[in-house]
Length: 312
Image 1 (cartoon, rainbow, N blue to C red):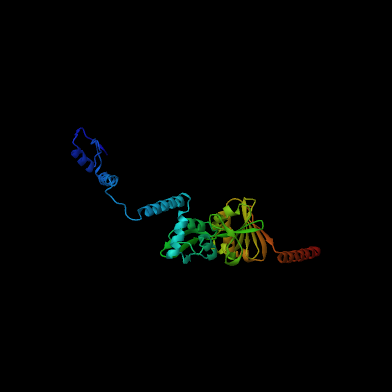
Image 2 (spheres, helix red, strand yellow):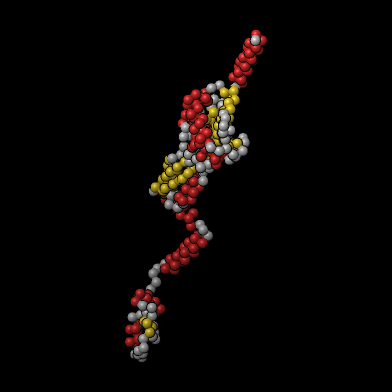
């Protein structure tokens, strides 16, 4: 801030003192304290009292060219690359990557998303950008990338948990508990997961599987849950028996089915299906062998009745 003085003095000696103290030649303006020393220095240069050091011109030229180069590097967006190159060649290149938490995700896929080229410097490495790329891999739920100086990168991931196998047409996919698709199903250790089949099964499946899970003895026999017309469910058991459930009162129907199996061993018999769609009846479909044996027994029984009737 400048302060104006109202006092005028023609004495040259007093004016000279004011200039030395930071005032202008006219004595009207007093410079702030932090500008007084540079002002005195410039006055000495102007008066020829200061002698430039040797090679000053060379140094100034180098400084000017360096400043121009630095400005061009920053303005052109090349500064991060320059930092990478310099630090990588001075001992800060990433030499180790520690990956943990991956079971389904290949370490090669993770390293590919990290994007190292052998000269990538830890100092200029964008860990957040690498974390976002790794988090985009199919099995990755969350990812964390941490720089450990001088030359190590740590990658910690948490993977998604498969809940069921979803079949739509000929395509098989692993899904989470909320119905989100994780990745295509290719067999392996996930083959024991329950299967949900049909349109709408991906969204409605988790809730229905949870309802069946309230009856553990029944749930452990189920191989697949089939969504029919987006309205109701069929259950395919591991022994090949199909259970046809109604559109409504699923909880009551499942409880009834579990009780019948627990009391009479219904589902372990040689049958093909159990139809529970009608509220007042239960229809059991016999297997081919059982149906043939039943038919033979009926013929024999009817024949005996005719004979007994003839004697009458």
